Image (tube, rainbow over all chains, first blue to last red; front, side, top):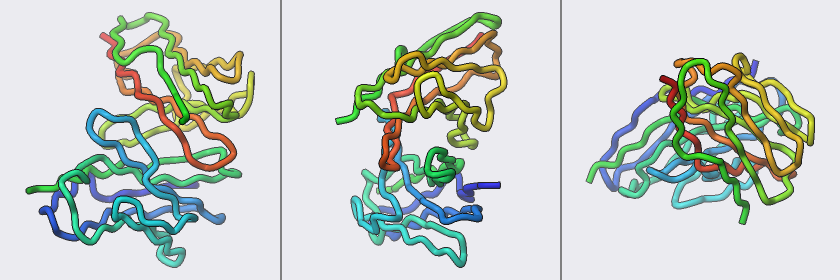
Amino acid sequence: AQRVTQPEKLLSVFKGAPVELKCNYSYSGSPELFWYVQYSRQRLQLLLRHISRESIKGFTADLNKGETSFHLKKPFAQEEDSAMYYCALAYSSASKIIFGSGTRLSIRP
Amino acid sequence: DVKVTQSSRYLVKRTGEKVFLECVQDMDHENMFWYRQDPGLGLRLIYFSYDVKMKEKGDIPEGYSVSREKKERFSLILESASTNQTSMYLCATKGRVDEQYFGPGTRLTVT
């Protein structure tokens, strides 16, 4: 069965420190993976998708099929990065999307 | 810009009441979704619809039903609300591209 696992419920780092939010997935087909972010009092929104191979707000994520991982990274955390982050997997011709349990990122000044 | 609106931001209902949550989108997207968002559990799919009058169960459909009579509107119905349905409910849409667009959410409290 398809599954997305985010092992950390809370990640707290100092401003300027590197950030890595972990995401592992389970899917027998070719995965389409995303990171969504929800800032305080805002709606959930797409941060980035693996097929774009882009950097958004300094964040990158690389799909590692061997380790079935899609970790989100940023070299230098900023206070405005504090938010809830969800990893998501699209399958079944991308009609269905499942989400991980989320990681709350807190950046300390 | 895609706009997804939900009928209420906050809702308080009594146990046993029938509850309607409405979602409207203005981008002509085929796919619409209802999730509930709970701390530590993330987003769990309740139902989704890939066309008018078409629906499919998600991971936690028990206690819920849906209606999609028009392409732009997707309703979530709690036939008889219970306290364990207290949650944040999120509606989302998706067109041909994979990105989902979310509504602001409805925080439902069942007392």
